[in-house]
Length: 223
Image 1 (cartoon, rainbow, N blue to C red):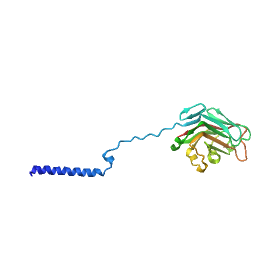
Image 2 (image 1 turned 120 degrees about the vertical axis):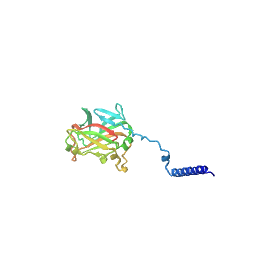
Image 3 (image 1 turned 180 degrees about the horizontal axis):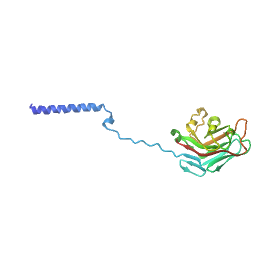
Image 4 (image 1 turned 30 degrees about the vertical axis):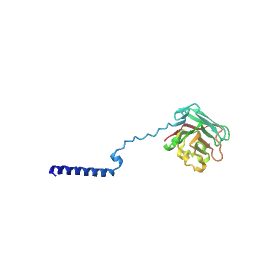
């Protein structure tokens, strides 16, 4: 064999060895190293529109859908009470004798699903101003759906004021934390909020007439 042929033959052997080496090396690589995957664009989490129950004299918007009488307000228990608009706020009034544990409640015409709010640290929020002195209240509870008794969210009366509104924010996971044996937590509800007043021990009843509480900006939010 001539020198030239020997050189060509040797070079061919060298190229074959290099090719085999690269093939063995690449076989140990992840597929993504050989064939890069396309960049994935994360899907944005949808922004939930706050569910406005009462705000500045307007009642009832759910997911941006505002309908007349979508939310119905009513007062129950503990003697007759009524409500009216006072400026932009909702004024809850006493209208009878021996009133001790009245409730102000917002009802939906049809039950709604609150599950979209739960994984996003949802809150039931409102602004509250006392109409009486702090000592005139035994307790104030915030609830929704079928929560009763001490299963509601008790407000710290010392943080509330009779001269200005105090923002109250109740995390929805508080209601989920109630022991499951009570079976009160509901993902579908027609009772979208409830405020319960209790008179002081004694009992010392609430006044027979006049305002008991002022409320505004009642809404569910996703944060």
